[in-house]
Image 1: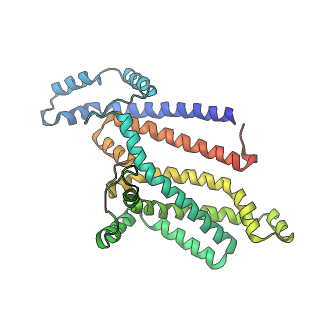
Image 2: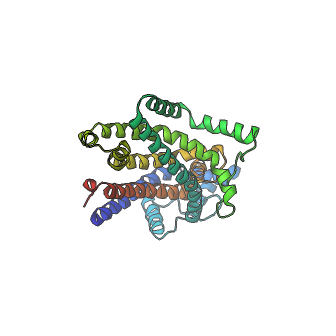
Image 3: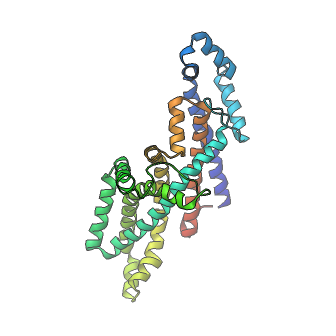
Length: 313
C-alpha cells in the first residue's frame, strides 16, 4: 500500500507539472492583452512593451515557467497582477470558503443517498418508485433556477436567511450556518439525485446475489443482510461515486458562489480568468489538481480498507 501511495503521489506531481505547463503556455499568448488591460486608456504599443519588460513577460516562456515552478515548489505563487495580494494565502482562504460549503453538503448527500438507496432497493414497490422520482426531479432541476428560487422564497419573501454574503465559522458559527444553508441545499439536491440512484442500483445488484439468498434460507434477518453484508459490499463503488460527487460539487461551486455572492474558490477563479490574472490562474490550477489527486487517493485507500480484495500493493 505504501508503494502504491508513493506511486500515486509521483503521478500526481507529474500531472500537476503537465497541467500547469499547458496552462502557462496558453496564458502566455495573451500577456500583451493583460498588459493593455492594466494600462487602460493609456495603453500604446510602447507602454505595453515597457510594462511587459518591467514584469518580465517578454522573456522566453520556458524561462518564465521555470521561474514560476521553482517559486511554486517553495510555496511562492507570486502576486495578483491587479491587487498585488499574494496568491498562495488568498487561494487557501478562498478554498476554505468553498470547502466549508462542499464538506457539509457532501456529508448530508451521502447520508440521504445511502438511506434512500438502501430503502428503495430493500423495500421495492412504492419506495423504489418514490426514490426514482426524487432522483429524476433532482436531475432535471437546474441548480441556477433552484438557487434563485430559494433566494426569492427563503430570503426575500420569508426573510429567514441572508440572500447573499458569507460569515466565517471562526467569527460566528450560527451566522456561518445561516450563510451556507441555501448553497448547501442546492448542492445536496443535485448530489442526492445522482448518488442515490447509484446506491440503489448497486444495492439491487447485491441483494440478487447468491450469498443473499443463502443467508435468507438460513434465517438471517433482512436488516442483517442489508446492513452487514450487502451495504458493505456496495460500499466500495459508493465511495468512488462519492469522490466523483465531491469533484462535481467543487466544479459546480462556481455557479453557487456567483448567485449567493460568496468569496469562494470558484468566484475567485472566474474573476481571475476574466481579468487574465496569470499568477492567480496558475495558483488556482495547481490547487485544483492537487485537491482532485488527494480525493482520488483517499478514495482508493478507503476502498482498500473497506474491501480487502480491492487492496493494492
